[in-house]
Amino acid sequence: MRNFHRLVATTALGLALTATAAQAETWRYAFEEAIDEVQGVFAQKFKEEVEANSDHTIQLFPYGTLGESADIMEQAQAGILQFVDQSPGFTGSLIPEAQVFFVPYLLPTDTETLASFFENSEAINEMFPELYAEQGLELLTMFPEGEVAITTKEPFASPGELDEVKVRTMTNPLLVESYKAFGATPTPLPWGEVYGALQTNIIQGQENPMFFIESTKMYEVTDHVTMIGHNNFTTAVMANKEFFDGLSEDEQQVIRNAIDVAFDHIIDYQEGLHEASIEKIKEAKPSMTFTTLSEEERAPFKEAAQEVEDAFIEMTGESGQKILDQMKEDLEEAQEATSS
Image 1: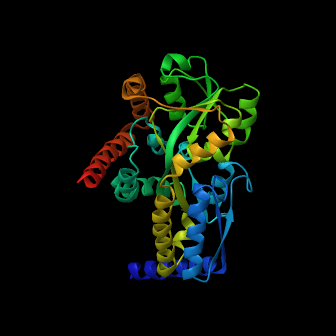
Image 2: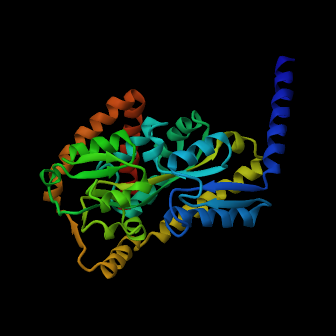
Image 3: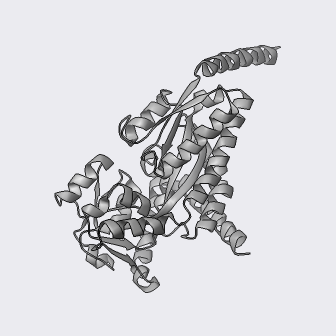
């Protein structure tokens, strides 16, 4: 009898939540980039799919329209936004284990292996959703945005040459540890302040995928781009959990299907994007130099990466260790799958 009453109460609550969700005909989705950048392209495809397969419309809010990254995350947790796209770099303060994406040299540079990893990883698809749920978020997907390059005012090819170079980082403890290990002086700054800080020499460097360096004109205030192969920028798309749980199974499936289509679309979209962005920068500023460090030159950076991995375990304990171990296993499987 008690189970019957519990079932009735649960059903009533479910119906109430569904009714609330159904009234929200327009769903709000904010992201950290411009509409024509990678996160914006993903969001547009997601919007297109949801609107084609449901009665709902998606209202998109590119970077800056609703504040900085911290603002849109707060709005997503509060239910003001139904969807948010935010890098684990920022989410790391809420979910320390998400900083694993900033362990240098963990992710491969090969795009096919990366796509396979993100699509099939047990760590991403089974372990991380539980951690996001604890913060009131439904993790829908994570996807790569491109190899991270470092732009600086002076060239460098070793950790020693980064001594006293102030490099902007996100407000992410592990990213700060990375740049300390690389010999630089990490300087956390909100993105809106980076261009001006480079212009006035408050900082002398920053890191981002190549498309973002080109579109945000970081080349105007730096002179050298260096690829040390240390990371691929990762981002995560989430829904407010209370909102998502209140949807009907059909509506949840529409969202999941739209996410799958957008994921495939964004992987295809990024093919050749890194190289095309380099060409655009060269055209805009012929004096800009582009350097890819050799394996020999990368060796001291890779050696320093072990310190960062140790720092990650220290910050996150057993939970972080489990996720890191699982990710390494998932990455091995992805490499085997794409090389066979």
